[in-house]
Image (cartoon, rainbow, N blue to C red; front, side):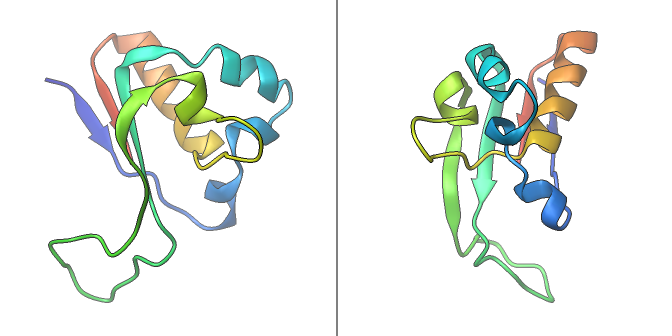
Length: 99
């Protein structure tokens, strides 16, 4: 059991972990087997609820330096969402899902 959080917003959510001050160190330290991450694509928009997401950039996966920062220019995951989830996990030690 654990908690799942939907991280949403505007341009602040596109700010990736690789872009933060000391981003290289933050990405290197991102190895949490009890935190799962998923990234919904920008093509998923709707004015009403639906059962299936239209686009997914990153399916559910463990938080690792690859899924948080990735090699080269691959950097889908939001810094705001990551640091929020990491703080929750470090404080409460329960599995965390971040979308």
